[in-house]
Amino acid sequence: MTYMNNRIETFNGSKHFKLKQVAEGVYAAISVPGTGSLGNAAIIDLGDSTLVVDTFTTVQAAEDLQTAVIHLTGNTASYVLNTHWHSDHTSGNQVFSPTAQIISTSTTLEIMATFGKNRVAQQLANPEPIFQAIKEVDEKILLEQDEKLKKEMQWENASDREYMNALSNLDYTIPTLTFDKQLNLYGSHRTVQLKTYGGGHTQSDAFVYLPEEKIAILGDLVLSKHHPVMIHATPYEWLNILEKIELLDIKTIIPGHGDVCSLNELHEVKGYINDIVSLVEKAILNKQSIEEISVPKAYENWYFTTYFKPNLKKVYELITNPVNTI
Image (cartoon, rainbow, N blue to C red; front, side, top):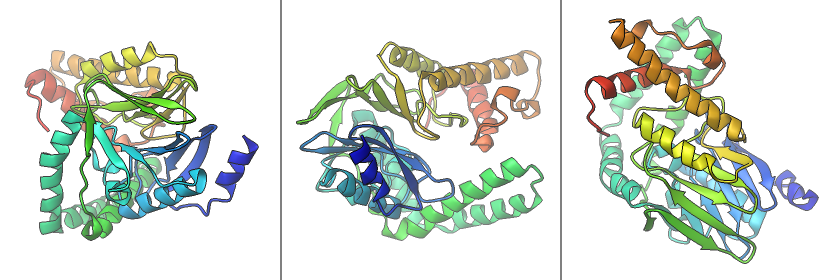
């Protein structure tokens, strides 16, 4: 363990993430707020090959991740898993292709090959609306009195700037290998399971399970002390997925956002989703506007506060007009 920790200590570092060893040959790359990472990534040394889980928001962050892979394992990445299609987990794919096989569920590939690809093309053709939105948030930041919310808005806008500044270098790279239930990757040191129980956070969510180490890398199915992002969510399916994950033998979780955690944070996400649904149902019953709902005390210190109102709106739309759209 000491030897492997020395590998981390001798890594030159990255402004985009901090490396944390979770087990021998298993590393979390924890996003630094306000940089070109936004989401977390992970590196797993299989022995004769290496798996990377998610690839950040920008090419620059992904290049640093590849440098870390080589430094820690002595090899470039052999496989990349995109846990879902969101850009903070997929935009760095090009750095690892074609050397690595990019893996996702078939549904995630379909979304990336259509909606995702078209969205990037539109952003490249007409970036001005996004730059205008960034400018408008800058103006709101100047007026914001809540210091915690102000700092989060600054981080989010800085991340958006990083993405837009790197956009011209983005070659949107879609997965090359798909699975629908489980795919095992066998290495000389360990075997890992790539699994999906369907879609909860998005239309399709995959994760990595290391049964011997009792580690799960869950993408955005679990966030640590961050508001779960529900804009593309199906709340009850999300809860079902988390209940199935609970049945696995897990001690350590690398979440999609936030620090390395445990099943406690999975339970907190379940509680959050249930609370959001209950708050919206109560508001509808009482003919109350969801705009009047405040962040519950249990979540006041969580990050991603700006997603609380959109989460309420998403659940409201699902209850009053249950149509699943991207």
